[in-house]
Image (cartoon, rainbow, N blue to C red; front, side):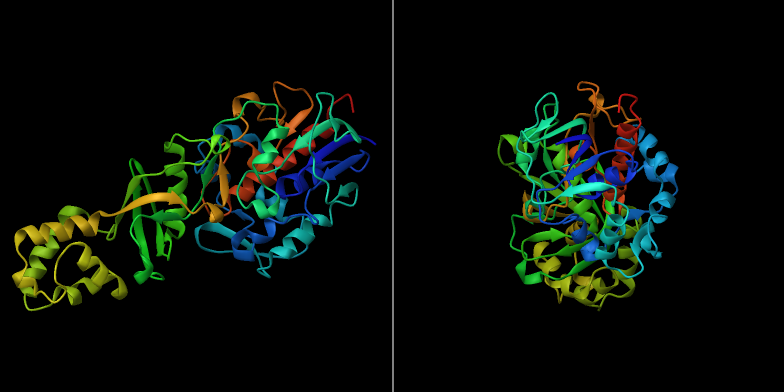
Length: 398
């Protein structure tokens, strides 16, 4: 069959591309899963953190490729997104936005209501696309929009095989927004949260909570830092797995600088000399973490402050400000996004069309675009998807 536009991928970007296409065009959306939006349903812990509601100028500063994204973000704004739905949204900390029902299924159903003009083929796996846009020998399209996603969450239809469909230059493909696996077994303190800490890897710093798990470290601070680690490592999933051996540091008391902490400890150790260090540290650390911390710095937890010598005090200060973990791997099964993808220098940011292959468009995670946690990546998907659909629809030869 022949179509004006074929959209490959039924995730957020693909669905939004379909929504942007006018009803007078013959459009088909091809999805390998038995239903649309499989990955969308998982976002935000099933609540769907649909976007981030920071003002656009500020929002763009959170992306490395802000100049590329600017046009798509202004073409399809958060207000445009909210207007698609007949229900309300709530805004939480850090401008994260969720449906008031806190059900991602409501977002998916709301999107599907706007796709009546599009033919949706489920359980349709695209195995090849010819240069003249013949798909699997049975579909011919004038234009093609590729929105197949990345490599994370393969159970949702993402995977390495999708890149075989792309005859365009790719950057190295890597894991992003992933929990980290530590060399040390942390199972004895699993479940502890280090609140409002600052995580550092080389020159990258991220503030947020860190959750200690049986496998290692997770939580917003770690998840965001993981993408920076990944970008700094020289590997490509398409060539095989990655080998990580790096160190991260956690500032357990970021609200006070090192000199200020030293002065405070000097004063407290003098005025509260009979206090045991394990009790004193409750001012800085969560109770369940103190014993582990003391063992790591080799200081008896029942030691009185007045009996702690200068060397031990300096070691205490150093570890409060720079408590290190050795990282050996990403928890790949839980990585949320893909770092890398189709090279942006070959994509027109005002249309999402390839500069190499006319009438071929890209949208969403398949592009070399990613952001931090908090609704930023769905914002990329919705805005680039809409722009791709709108641009393909307006081509003069359709």
